[in-house]
Length: 309
Image 1 (cartoon, rainbow, N blue to C red):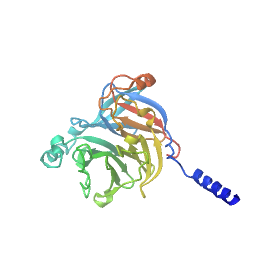
Image 2 (cartoon, rainbow, N blue to C red):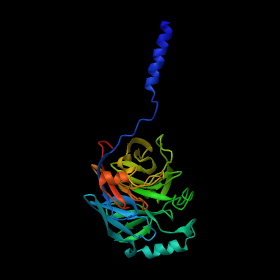
Image 3 (tube, rainbow, N blue to C red):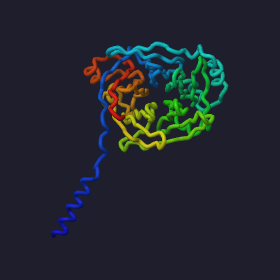
Image 4 (cartoon, rainbow, N blue to C red):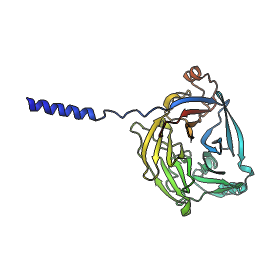
């Protein structure tokens, strides 16, 4: 009996050491919410110097916008007009003459933004291309192989975000779901690109990547459908940390769709900034009561950046 009792105790101890369910990701500390007066179709966030900037993913939007935040409010001001850049007309001609798949549903859709000093990187989701603005000129960033794996799914299942390792001359391009991956583009090797994936959270039933950021030597992935941000070692593509922004983003707008709405990620020394593209959906009753918002404007949500994240 003593031996049996010991075995049962050992088995019990072993069971106690095994997690019965995935531990919840640490929740970010919510600081503030800033609502626009209309749907701005925000898609991407970055800092250009000290200015928070964004792009809008409507087919007629051709600009980089400065984000102006005040208590509870959000406004946008045009910072860079793409039509005034050298090379823009040539790029428009390129889009019109290029017979790429899905072109009939649109050829221009800005979905992400990153910066290196005064240089700005964008992605055109519809054409599956990365763009660079530098010294007043717009050019296509060479990516080789340039289209591998990017034409599966629907027109909106293309490039969704971008991040830049400025010191390493590496560009990271996010391919959104349903089979997401990161395209790592080596600027020192004429745009040679490699597809990379990383381990998703066990609870992430609808994997997606809606934006990227590169800060302090780490790559950060915005997992909008899971309401989490993954911190990734770019050398190994192992996830070293993951945090949740579910409160208050989940349920912020009135929608029955399971997909998330966060489409822009920017990280500063002590803050994490999210851009929410609500697709013209109105704020929920819960959001109205908690934050005093109204209407159907897009939003910027600000969190404290945890130590070590």
